[in-house]
Image (cartoon, rainbow over all chains, first blue to last red; front, top):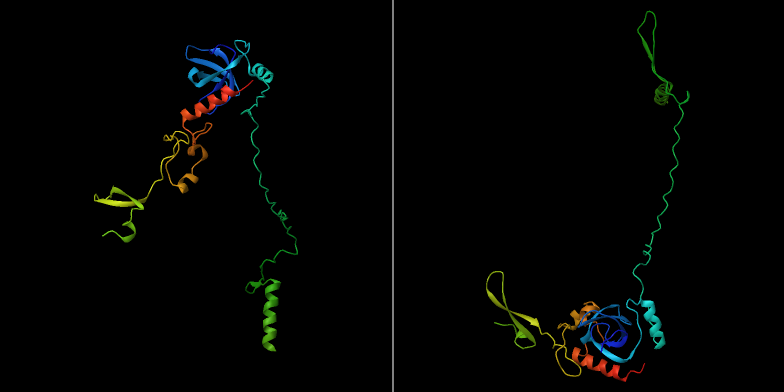
Length: 148
Length: 91
């Protein structure tokens, strides 16, 4: 009944109601099927034989069975292969940080340098500490204010 | 004394043992009827017996078997339907 090339309809499982062809007989209870169903081993009890048979090679490929189904005016839809390209992940736009201007090191000029306190050495009297100009001016100002 | 709202039988009663060790009666909402075959009336396997709000939160594959007429007909009736279809088919 379920010889090679027999067109059948599957009765059980998620492929139930779909048409297939027997490719190979595995043993007394199992056969290999292909067609609208997945290419798989199947119990004879789960198949309903139809009244058509075709010549099928021992190891018929899926493409060969596609052509047989074309003769019956049935087109097989290929499922998407799992070897698809990896999905592109969305890349979030990164906010551009404002570029900080590199602080140029200030050159030490002679004008910027603070005048150092110098000690004048007089020959006889005590050593007189001369204050830097900035300090002198502040002192003088204070004295001027007091006078007013 | 049972509170008034639990006196009616709209809630089912479940015997539970508390962590303390005492036995108590808990009141839970009733479960709906098991799904049945549309043709022969046999109980359907693979269809959950839960409230509608619980079923809506389940994934689609957990709600019914993944075969033609899954969740509507039992396997016997489904096979008969497909055999009828196969006999009438003209290739």
